[in-house]
Amino acid sequence: MLVAPARDWNIFQQIFAEHWDGFKRVYPRYNTRYYDGLVDKLLACGNPAKMGSIEYRCLYGGEGTHRVAMSCKSSLCLRCAKVYVDNWVSQVSHMLHEGVIYRHIILTVPAMFRTTFYHNAAVVLSALMRCGVQCMDDFSSEVRGKALQGGYIVVLHTHGRNGQYHPHLHLIATSGGYDGQGECWEHLQYLPYALLRRKWQWHLLRMVRQTLKTEAINQLVEACFRKYPNGLVTNVQKGTVPSQYQSLARYVAKYVVSPPIAVRRIDRYDGARVTYHYRSHRTERVEHETVAVDTFIGRMVQHTLPKGFKRIRYYGVQATKTFAKVRGVIQAALAKVEGVVKGAVKIIARLTYRQRYEQSTGRDPLICPHCRREMGVWRIWHPTYGVIYAEVEVIKRGTYASSAPRSGP
Image (tube, rainbow, N blue to C red; front, side):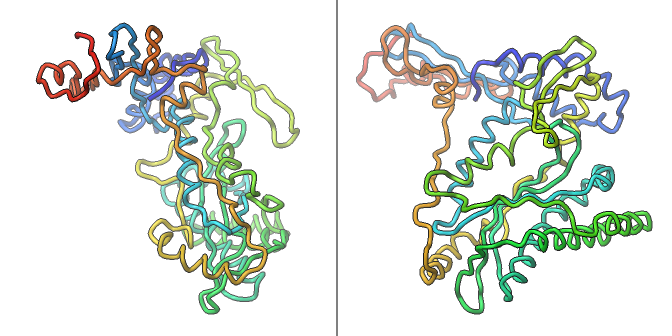
């Protein structure tokens, strides 16, 4: 469920409504039922007649009402992305092992491979995520001199700050790993950056060569080794993360689950061109870019992953199936380590629609403006299934248990 739409959001919908059909004629690879379905959901998002709604009503005086449109949850929808970020932060904050120090690590793909990744996304992107984990376990094990298994929450990003195709990985990684043979936790205080660059280059290029298996790819891999003799670009967040005063999940949320372009960054649309702004990595200044409307739409839809693809995955001691199983083992191992961070993980509650609305507008949407009492659910309607719940029918059946005075229908 969503708060009232902003002007920027209406412009974003307008761009797709006016140009989607023309875009498909120019780029027929997107002329499929899958992409049409995503766009249809996007255009219907926030429309109660198309998406369904929940109606609230003051059950005391009957004057106060509030209707909430259902959200579309389309992967193209920038407005639903905000809710997705909040929910992701809550989920991840429950998945971190207390006492373990985590780091935010970025593993990039060279520009010379981006077109290859774009055209082979169905087979390469999953392999890329597994490759990142293998690289980190290999790296940690070599630094410590023994086999270690770390924990990783891996998020695939396919866009840069300007919305262009730029696949890379964000990892929330344990700073160290579990030594199964010694039954102890090994913390890595120092991460040699140069070694990580070389390790990532070796693992990435080996994965590409083994996954695609063509002569053209072999030549591209050899060219990459020659062009980057010192390894590929990686970025490791320095310092102890999280600290006692911040949550790692909140810290990296803006990096790992943000949409290609936030709606507030759209500055102008004249029917043929779109102007938006972003903060450049190269200059660290706000840059403005004006592109043709087809280019803008392309920069949005090219980041839509195949149906069923999991953009966020959990590996090692963070794997969903083994998390509960290894929690006790990790805590026992940490007990042997001096200087364990206590209370480092802050649990963040998932925000409800009511809380998000109040944060956005400063007003509680479910408080009756007339009597200042809390409103209750009056009716839930779905465009396919019709009326799912009607309070008035409950009252008519005489099954209403509350003794509070009720308004009529």
